[in-house]
Structures are given as C-alpha cells and as structure tokens.
Amino acid sequence: MSSNPGVDAKKPPFIGLWLKAMRVPFLQATFVPVILGGVVAWEIAGKFSWPTFLLTLLGASLIQIASNMFNDYFDFKSGNDLQVRHQNPFAGGGRILTADLIKPSTHLIVSTSCLILGSLIGFYFIFALGLYQLFWFGLIGVVSTYFYVGPPFKLAYRGVGEFLVGLNFGPVMTLGAFYVQTGSLASATVPLLASIPVGLLIAAVLWINEFPDMDADKAVGKKTLVLRLGYLRSVAVYVGLLATSYFLVLLYAVLKIFGSFPITSYTTLIALFSLPFALKAVRILRANYKDPHAIIPANANTIILHLAFGLLAIVGFVIGGLVGL
Image (cartoon, rainbow, N blue to C red; front, side, top):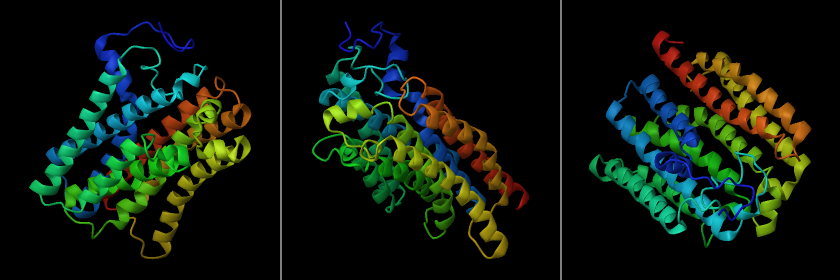
C-alpha cells in the first residue's frame, strides 16, 4: 500500500518502473547543453567526434540520472515528498519511493552506481585522453549531484539549488562537451555565451516546478528561493528568467552587427520562434500560481520551451556553420 494517499500504488512494468525512477523523460536537461557544446565545437573549431560525443552524452546522462534519484531518495527520507498531496506530475519528485514501488536501499544503490559509472567516463577523458581541465567541470557536477539535497550540505535547502541547476545544465555541461571535442578552452567564449540562455531556461523549469511544492518544502524546512520570495515575487523572477534568455539572443546578434562579437551565427536568432511557449507559460502561471493543478500546463510549457529554444539554437549554429552566416 502506498504511504502517500495521493499516489496510485499500482506497480508498472519493470522497465517502465525504472525509467520512471530515473526520470528519463527529463534527460533533455542534459541532451540540450551537451549537443549544443558539441555543435559549437564543430561550428567554430571544425572538430567533432561521434564516439566522443556519444560517450560524453552517456556520462552526463548517468550523472543526471544519479542526481534525479538522489533527490528522490533524500526527499523521501526527509519526509518532503510525503508532504505532497496534489497530482501535479512535474512536482513532488518521481513518487516511486512514496508509492513503495522500489525499496529505498535498492534505489540508493542504483543512483550511486550511476554516479560512479558517469564519473568513470569522466576519468577516462581526463586520464586516458589528457583532458585534465575536465576534472573541475566533473567536480562541480558530482558535488552538486549528491549534495543538492544530500547531507550535510543540503544545498537546495539553503536557496542555492536553482543557481546550481542553471550552472550545471548550462555552462558546465556545454563547456565540458565543447572541451572534450576541441581539447582546449581557448575559444570557450562562444559556448559560454551560448549556454547562458539555456541555463536560465532550465533554472526556470525548476523554478516553476517549485510552486506546487511550496507547502511541502515549508513543512520540512526546505527553503527554496521560491519559498523565500513568496508567490508574487517568484512569478516576477520566473518572467525575468525567460525574458533574459530572449534578450541575450537579441543582444548577441546586435553586438555582432555593430562590432566584433564572438557569437558567430546570426542564425541562432531562430531560437526566438520558441517565444509562444514562453508567453503561454507566463499567462497560465500569472493566473494560477497558487493552484497546483491549474499550473500544470505552465509547467509543461516551460519544459517544452527549454527544449524548443535549445534545439532551435542548435539548429541555428548548424545552419550558420553550413552557410557561413
């Protein structure tokens, strides 16, 4: 029987169960920056290796899976997810543990194994290929993965979780993917600038997903920034995250027109075509920020926005590389 009355305890098939536990659909948070870093390496340096790219994607995905599962494990142990009574699929964790579908000990073993495997791939790049600066990217990722909600630091409880998510799934992964392709960070300005809007948008995904969890977070002392700021100011910050992402795309293009600016492709402006998702999400959030059910379309549109914006920017770099714009 489920320990959470708001969760359906019917056990899904084995594969589906573990895909849900790993929260595989949310791996777009990794796919977008890793692909972006690889494409930028090809576009500005003419370097791209498929085996290296696929190994990078695998390693980064394993780290995210570990992060997803650690978060669920520690939120379950703290009682955080047990406080969630609503049925918003984008909040309250994966709900595998609260529904008693997997033993917590097994869940922890799998998450730890994913962290170790992802780290081993990183060590291969560092020591076998001599990419020593990757150590620092990996260190940020591994520390964030475990201590995001894990003791003793519980970083998400201290109001820095949103920053860490934006940093890791923006600049860290993009620059890491760029570095393993080129072997150098000498031209890192372009991937860094390209990664900032992506990082802001994935932070926005976490940000809006924290609205339905405010009561549960408050009950266990998880002082997220959304909880600290309250509803109205948090809505304003969310709008600011989205607006800044689009502003940066426009700013990069304008600066390139009027001077020497390192972003090399005007064609990245096609990322602006994702704007309808942003407008819809903002409209729904403003009208329903206190309703964990009515806010669901805004949660979904923010996730779609991150994916659409990221893929369009990637396509923009590809087009720019092919036609020389």
